Length: 459
Image (cartoon, rainbow, N blue to C red; front, side):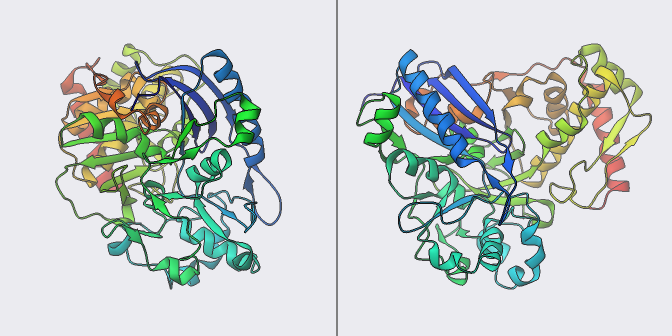
């Protein structure tokens, strides 16, 4: 089978919707379009702008195909999300924003029916971060929805359905703290029966399978060729993991950075996971369980960052010397310290030094996550933090591991392109990061931070 030369990747993150055209010879993104993933208000609940995204995607596909040619399409999206369709294939209800607090209002009733962590590898999370909790609350809020729903699709496959008309779900999205999947037995969990969706859940498939080909309508609107294949699609953190599964030998860990920072250990030390600290079992593109831990690092960065100049080596050195330290957690309710309240030890820095201190804090939170999942070997960093020297410096020092950083704009688009071009992963190993700061200064700071966390923060 010929490897597609140009793969259009639909990449819907929690913050932004993206369309990237990936050249599979280099894994470079040769064209990128983005739009904010704005949550729209309204009844019966806040929803994502699916129609706005669809118009954006069709326009982008037409533009990219006209300029470069598109040989295949792949899809990756954030997790904790599903789309419910009626028997005619239309939306049975708006797609709920997983940060809506509605599911918390019926938490006790949901807790009575959700399976144990031992079955699902899924920790109990607030709001709608457990997809099962979303569905339970939606059915309580709109009782007729139980009757109207004909298909429950995980989010990547909704876009696949719009492109091809084919119905599916994928194992990586089902395995993303949904409570709906048993990763050890590779099958839906008992919750599907309890929610009444066992016969409505779209058939689970592996992400790299071909979902179908573009519909005649999509071809007419974009100019793309009939027969253009569309992959089943994948959860975004697992898209970041996929290139390394294809070219690395275990043990290693991948850190996918975006709104969420997700640390995934392949061939790790086999730690017992603690669901109270936002550890979980993800499911990779091959359907295998992967011990993982996460925190909302991208959201924390946006909350904390200064709009001034980016920190340089002198700013990092000043922070390491003066020791202002940020303790967790800036975003409460998730991550390894979900009940802790953030505070600074020492004067709160400003300007570029603030950026340096924030980068160091995010690296130490990531190192904590890696420890929780039994990390061993090299750490491979994907996404925006892969370009942050202070983050990479401290991550290597705190873990005692070599760190490799992806040079791409985002690891998710390249990873998703490999669903249709797996051979393209060869020869594109991320560069080894060379620290800009002395190892001893980094270690002293990390040890002091960890001592303060142990003394002041209850997990």
